[in-house]
Each structure stands twice: as C-alpha cells, then as structure tokens.
Amino acid sequence: MPTFETSPGSGAPTLHMAFVDALASAGEGSPEWRSVKAGWLVMRFVDKWAGAAVRGDATGPWLREVNAIHSAVADIPSGAAHRAVDLLYRALLDSWGRRAAPVPAALLAYAQRLERDEAWALAADVYETFLVHAATDADHDLAPDAYLRLGFCLRRAGRVDEAATAYGAAGVMAAAAGKVRTGLLARIGAARVLKHRGNLPAAASALDAILADAEAVAAAHTSAGLSDAVARARHDRGTLANEMGAYAQAVTLYYGALELYVDDASRARVLGDIATNLAALELREPARDANLVLLATAREPSIRHAAACNLMELAHLDGVESDFERYRHLLADVTLSPELAAHVRLVEGEGLQRFGHDAAARRAFAEALAAAEAVQLHAVAFRAGEALAAQDRRTSAAAERADRARDVAVPAAITHVVTAVRRMRELAAAPG
Image (spheres, rainbow, N blue to C red):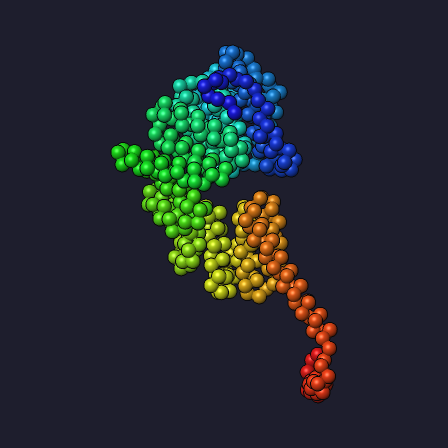
C-alpha cells in the first residue's frame, strides 16, 4: 500500500487491479460492467493527469483517448455513480497539466460513492490513488480522513493487514494535525481489526481504553464530532459484548450509543442491534417493539427488511402463524442483499417447519444453505445444514418404523383379534 509520506504527487501509474478484477467478474455489457469499465479508464486517466501536472505539461490529452473515455462514461446508466465518474472526468479535462482542487475533491467524492455502493475494493483503490497523488496543503489536510476511510474499505474487502497499516497511518497523521476525532476513529478501526482477527480480549481492552479517552475528551470539549466518536466506541464495544455472549451489557452499551447518535442511519442500526440482543435475552416483547419501530421508520430498505425478518422469527417462536405469514409475504417480493436473503430463507424454513409445512421448509433450508455458502455465512450455513440433516433423520426414522410395522409377525394368541378388527373395518367400509 502506498504511504503518503513517500509518494505525494509522484504521478506513478498503476494497473488499478481492483477494477480489472471487477471487470473480470461482471457480465460483459451489463450495467455493472459498463460502470466499472468507465471507472477504470478514468482512474488510469487520473495517473496521466498527475504525471502531466508534475511535469507542467499542458499538451494533450490525446483526442482518441478522450473520446474513448467520454463514450465509456456516457454508457454508464444514469444515477449517482454516473454523476461521480463524470464529475471526476470533467475535472481532469479542465485542469490538465496543473494541480487543481476540483480533481482531489472529485476523487474523494467518487471513492465515497463506491463506498456507499459497498464496492469496497474499488473504493480502496480510489482512496489509495488520492493519497498517491496528494500534493497540496489541502490534500495534506484531507489525508488523515482518507487513510481512515481506506482502512475501513480494506477491512471490508478482507485485506486486514493493509487495513491495520492504513488505520495506523490515519492515527499518526491525525495526531500531527490535531484531529482528535479522526485519531479516535482510527483507534476504533484498529480495534475492529483485532476483532476481525479473532482476538476478542485484546479488542475489548482496546475499546475500553478508547471509550474512556473519548468520554474524557468529549466532556472537556463540546463537540458533536467527539460525541459521535463516543457513540461509535460504545457501539463497537456493544458489538464485542454481543459476540462474547454478554447480551445485557451489549444492550446497555448500545443504548448509550443510541442516546448520542444524531444521524438517523446510525440510530436505526444501533436500535436494530438492541433488538437482536433483547431477543437473545428472550425478551420478545421489547424486541418486537424495537423491530416494529424500525419497520415503520427506518429510511434504509435493508434495515426495514432485517426488522421484518426479525419479526418473522419472533412470530414463529411465539407460535403465531398469521404474523409469521404476514412478514414472510412482506419479504417475498423485495430485493435483498445476499447475506440477508440467506438469513430470511433460514428463518422462513424454521417457521414453516414450526407450523407443519415440512416440504416447503425443506426447500427454504436448501435455499438458505446455498445462499449462505455463496457468501461464506458459516453460522447460517451450519444451521440450515443441521435443519436439513434433522429432517433426513426424521424421515429415515419414520420409514424405519413403517418397515418394522410391516415386518412384525402377529402373535398367535391375538390372531383372532387382528382378524376380527380387519373384518370390522371391511364391514364399516372404512378406507384402507
């Protein structure tokens, strides 16, 4: 990973392999493929722009290349992604051969757009590119936060060691620039890396220290940003408590975060976490209350869908089939993320089995298993696989009992009783 201190303004071209890999995995000609292709061409153009700016070379760019990029950008489906790429492309053209503030700003806007779209590897590539080409004082001021976002994207992309390096760089640069909030968030990111690596005790110790420092700093300085850092530390510490099975502690920490968050998205996410832990404590009514609030008020569809899934699960646990079917049908016609789709199919299967629909439950469990394996949701895959195996065991046991019943010889002492009962059935014309 490039380091800000050694490579500002280098203009060194890269292959932008994240874009190349994304192109290879997308269906050629699909909207996703066209968007990634345009992004790749524009990112290569960024490298050439930076090189020309370093040399002070105002000649170019080549008309053929400009036309190719223009055509690729125009081919992206309209929407936020199109606007972000087009803004960057036009900023490059307008400032060819010289440093200009619109280009770094457009780079960061494009990275943030990719991050919102959960294109983690692509967003990381764009943040890295900004850091490689950063040269002005304004770029330097933005670098700590760019490193912070880079660490987040790298961690979500599974590049944990690189994420740790990025968080470390963010912390060092934030301290040098006096950016207290960014420094706290960088430490939270580093603690998340520890958790990702499975070192939960070390992550807990780190988050406890961060939380104490953040609360002390926030108490001394009235700042919404510092309050937000405290909220994030509480939220992360609550998530760690949840993973360690301390559900009541998690609820307390989550509620502390809920009281400090001011943005709706963060409040909705932490309320969802509260609901999950209330359910884990078997406090179903409060869990239902929290999920109903989310279903009615959350702006993000994914949060509303997760709440509906949770309500579906609570309904089958309580044995209320009408509520189970209501939430099941609510989720039937919506587009779900692969992860949530796996969870929904699993809960659906458990409910269908609870209410005696074994064949439909089996189909739902099989779909849950396939979906979970595709996105490496090991816990969901395990539960779905165990449910299918349990169904197989029950079917096998029932068949074995049927075979034994056919093979059992009638004891001689009761042969007359068996014959009489059969005769009674025949006289009653009862179906056989």
